[in-house]
Length: 110
Image (tube, rainbow, N blue to C red):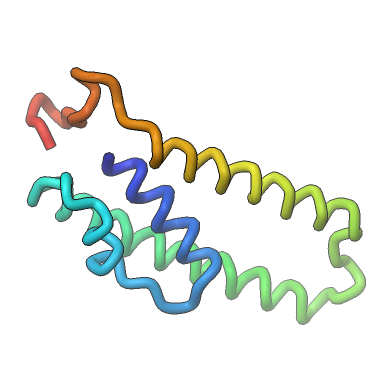
């Protein structure tokens, strides 16, 4: 469940400016207190790294506008992202089989 949260959170961070991981955790009520702590910590790293990457992309685009992607490559990237987003949405609708509903980390159930 932690990885699912992080994938959903990372997707939203890439599309929206301000995303609060605590607000998103409300969509995952089955997260334990330990899992929420992990999600909060990892979510902060996702947010930091995504902002850094977006700023880098913005700065590179400003320095070299002649080296932008071709329409075909941009279309392919958008299609890949849409495909990944649909797969993630389908996985959220599919319940986990019995016995795989909990994540174990270092022998502790989260």
